[in-house]
Length: 510
Image 1 (cartoon, rainbow, N blue to C red):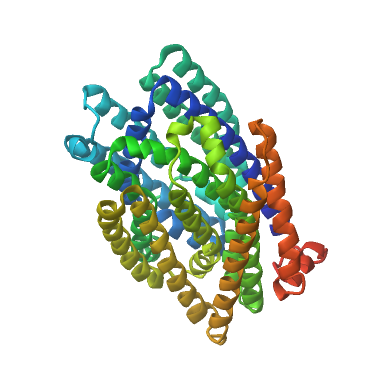
Image 2 (tube, helix red, strand yellow):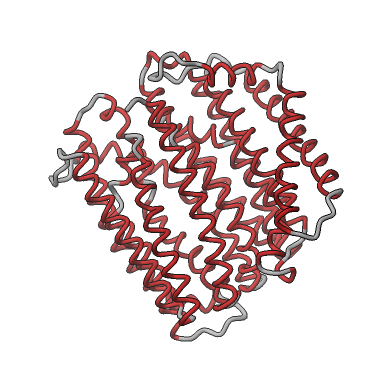
């Protein structure tokens, strides 16, 4: 299967699977709150954030392994692919054991992280079951990385969505009939084990040349060099994505985590949806950058990719910002609504995350890990410092604001790396890039403002009708303003050219 078809297949199945996952998450969360309570929801979210910190033991091996697989997969060097996969297998096995022991070591400290919830033996059992679920991934899921690097990620996503549907129905049934969180977590562990086992067996069939062998020290040494650089980015990624729940739990309240999670389940699924749609592009970029004959295309692809991400961000985030309050009220009740300020900060953070993703893909696709690590370290320190201080100054709003501020720092810094090392002869275009992005942000604000005014004119009692009309209205306003502001732009012409192009599917050219 050629690259373009593989990318389309990965994006399509990834997007569908994520939408199905979102539906079941919303249903699960609704049932969870109704039958188990928001306190247990906040507790679970806090534990997941803490376990995300322990997952830093992974160090960044997955990212480094993906990068190391691009070239041998291009060259069909099966022997080297097998050696790299075996390195990943051995390393992840050790990480799995370390993760379990670290989780046990955290048990005495849970009482310092949880506030306003009485700690019983059940709380410790919940934590360890969540830890076991995470550990299962290290022991079983290493071959997923090969599928991703080989642009066959749609296989694992298809398997995941089937098991997600089956086990989500089972978990919902258990909660309604028994209100038992332990059985709920047991089913979650079973889902992780069975889905990863099926992926594992499928990979054995698809890649029959894979077999166990001793660790290749030469290849390991090269991968380890990249891992040391990626680790700082892993720490920063955790600090950015997971510490909010811990800070809110420790300095505000654990219940507040549960309130925020109702919003972040929506924003995080939007993030995951776009990652599912765009993730297939990352291996294409990695392979393109690994081939010297394709380097002339990489800057054109960079601008086109940035513009595509802006369109996706606008299409998804503008209706989300406007409709999310009504969704929360209809979903869990008006008592769970947070301030509009929190929503705006969440959306600002998500917008930056989506648009700056092209910089991350180029940095990782080009193996520029060692330059990104310094930015990651500074950003991590900035994020945790701002979160704690802003929690005292402005409460929940301050913690969410600190995340958005850190994202701005990441975006500026990573764009500097891209224009310094990926386009060294085009440094003047750095200012052009930022001029285009500032223009896009202003257009986004304009579309949002017009949409807010237009939506306020809809006076309907029926939530579903109002929701659908509001969503359609936001998209129509986006299309109208987009074509006025971009119809004559170079990015728009490049996008049309790319869509219409029927020629070579092996090169991602514009």
